[in-house]
Length: 270
Ligand SMILES: C[S@@+](CC[C@H](N)C(=O)[O-])C[C@H]1O[C@@H](n2cnc3c(N)ncnc32)[C@H](O)[C@@H]1O
Image (spheres, protein in one colour):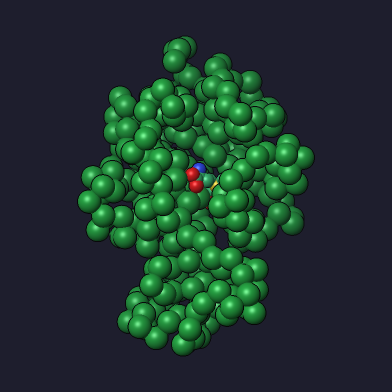
């Protein structure tokens, strides 16, 4: 995979490290120094690219810029209670489980579960997304509020099917596996989900990075593998989506736009 990276002159020192990290993950960077990476520049250069500047590492496309931006989650994290957060209830995050988030993406769900005390291992297989997560993680360690939360988080660059099989072979004790696989954008549009503009923007750029042409991996195999190693598997789905792997869950937590499907090895209730 090849990708352009626009970098501001002040950040040249971070570029070599970024290039090396991405190269080991199979991404070849075409680095271009840009004096002013501003909104006009991004509008005039609408193709998918990386940006390295005062915001850290971001992805850009169609004049928009996005990154996992964990500091933007602080407000939600401060307000979050078990009562307001279905995800925390579904994963029993406050019992401090040993939890694998097998589809890390931007890491926002992991951050929330880690805030409630879960020991979260984030698995992401996409080299660009994984590298964006590393930047967010490093930045969060410098923040007084986020630092104790990210202390509960470990990042792993891997395909989750392989990772989960290795954990099974090692007989590791995993309490919860959380899955939020990609869902085709066309199907999400049909559901006319009311999403905040910021979330929509992030999803549009994510879908450019993870295009839907060809066989999109919808994560059915992940559910099978997760059920082999964890007594509790929680799957996030759009509210009206079909079940993952056509497997009917034992319990559901229903929200306006999404729901959480619960699969338990031993029957348990919320
Ligand atoms: C919908 S996003 C997850 C969003 C995430 N819950 C969040 O809070 O930002 C799905 C992510 O899972 C990743 N993914 C899908 N299948 C995977 C697998 N087998 N192994 C590792 N990552 C996977 C994709 O690359 C994508 O980044």
